[in-house]
Amino acid sequence: MKIVITGGRGLLGSTVVRQLLSRGHECVVVQRTPSAIPGAHEVLQDLTDPECSYSWLAGADAVIHLAAKVGIVGTQEQFSAANVVATSRLLAAVREQGIPRFVFASSPSVAHVGSSLMGVGATVAKPDQVRGWYSKTKAIAELEVLAADSAELSTVALRPHLVWGPGDTQLIGRIVQRAQAGRLFLIGGGFSLIDTTYITNAAEAFVVAAESTRAASGIALMVSNGEPRTVRELLDRICLAAGVAPPTRSISFRAALAAGHAVEKAWVSRETEPPLTSFLVEQLGTAHWFDISQTRKLLNWKPSVSLEQGFAELERSFATRP
Image 1: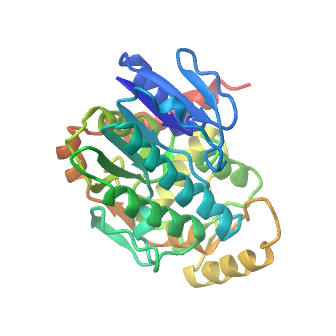
Image 2: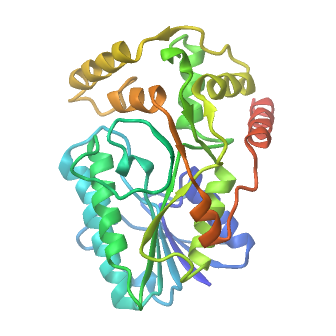
């Protein structure tokens, strides 16, 4: 198949591209900055550009749309341009080109309204209730993607939860940096159960979703390892793999939430991500684990790398770094 991937430079995108290439697919990677993945055809383009050309869609059998603006830094207009408008234009171009499959990278946050999520599947996105411009705009985009499903275009949204692995500069990198600086702490003792997704498993879900043209259409699916662990255990294992001391300090959920709101207000004009947000507090202080049975069934997919294997790979990667 010829598959177009938007946003192929990050951990998830680059792993998806490499897996597709290993399975014999032709990959066209569209992004703003080069990544030079061997074997992939790279197109440097900004999807938020009104003059964006979609000539690279010609002859494609599927599109995996990963490109997005993430985090909390930025205006409503910036998040909307990257996550809603760019997705809408791409969808229109895909329909015009007659491409039969569109796989959208969504997030569990599109249905998270602050309370615990325990053993649930992919409930409907709630753009009017979720927190932060990232979650709101991704929710709007997901609803549009799923509504576009038709006999001519099969669409599906995948919601991977907390993707991590060797080389991850976001989740793993930030945890390790804070632990090294003595700024990593637990919320409510770190006893909340949460799901995470090892990078290999997350990428495989997107690959099989692109290959399975009509297996799952017009719906959202949860993606995780299906192995919920306490926040305390996850942080301990990550720190152990990196050779740094795990967190020992803990603060109450209420105090952490108040601090998160205060930091957000003080951080409004800055261009870097704040060290603490109310959303992060909710993620670490409430349960988040999901039912992935529908994903397993419809995509004929299952996690191939366990958490234990993932932590072993993470430890090996840290051991081989300079």
